[in-house]
Amino acid sequence: MEMPEGRGAWTATVGAKGQIVIPKEARDMFGIKPGDTLVILGDAERGLAIPPKEKFGEWISAVFDGGAR
Image (cartoon, rainbow, N blue to C red; front, side, top):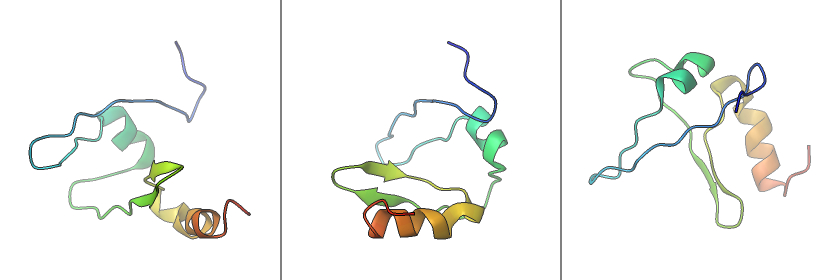
């Protein structure tokens, strides 16, 4: 299935130390480089999210305000 421009879906396997490798296509799309620090947000009902650095403020508001934008 072909994804629309700017969107993607990938899988990652969790290793024995709890580490994941972000697929190259996703790293390229979001400009993730070695040494970057990523923010991982979690909600027991909604799951995990790794927002782009530029969008962090918007995402954190959505998570802690119950989805309000």
